[in-house]
Amino acid sequence: MAPPNDESRYAHRLYEQGLREVLSLGEVKESTCFTAAMVFAPAARHYIVVLKEGTVEVLADELSVERIPGSPHDAASARLTGLA
Image 1 (cartoon, rainbow, N blue to C red):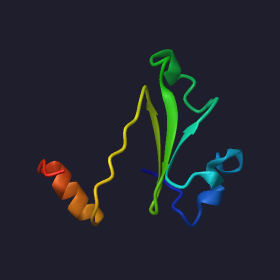
Image 2 (cartoon, helix red, strand yellow):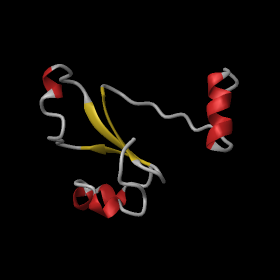
Image 3 (tube, one colour):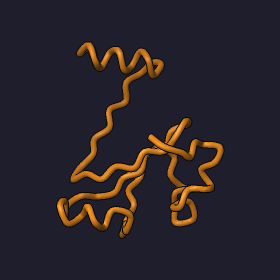
């Protein structure tokens, strides 16, 4: 996770290319950000996750998201202990 957070997201390099419309998770189409890595992972796609405290960019063949109710601490605890 890295900057920007939700208050300075307008400064992100992808903001004007559509990041402003992303509420939680999006895919960056025709991304050139990871061109060198694509040699090793040609099927990979560029995803971006926007969070209150930061932004996460992911290069992966696929991505799944699981929403666990409760506070972040409770959700992480439940996931780590196998309850979710």
